[in-house]
Amino acid sequence: MLNKIKKEIKNNKYTTAVFLIFLGIFIIGGIAYAIIMPSAGTPVYGNRLDGIEEVEITEEQTSAIVKALQDVSVVNSAKTHISGKILNVIVEVKENTKVTTARNLTKYITKNLDEKQINFYDIQIFITNENAEKSKYPIIGYKTSSASNFSF
Image (cartoon, rainbow, N blue to C red):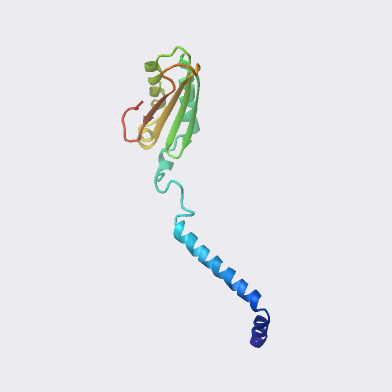
């Protein structure tokens, strides 16, 4: 049996050589990929989301935030989006809304979250005006999990 394999390899030298070259290239490519991309398969956020299950923002809370914002007379629309540990709130205000009034909308967000959630999540608020030409808009406010107030 071994002699038969040796004879077959001798008769197909070029095919065997090409096969061994491609096999070598494939193995070297796999090793190079493992060296260049060592974190393939690990979570995108690493360990930054550890503990999020304990302070997860529920659908009811995001709905309450949207409803509280839409109940304010200067707000046309509001929506939320959670990405990792960042809560994004997008608000469109009416044309004649003052910037200070728009900035005060942040209290409706924090009012609908508990203290643990406020201290875990980063919160962003994007405030646009229904008149896209309006100066001083858009406004972006940001509160890190360790900050006590929003920065604009």
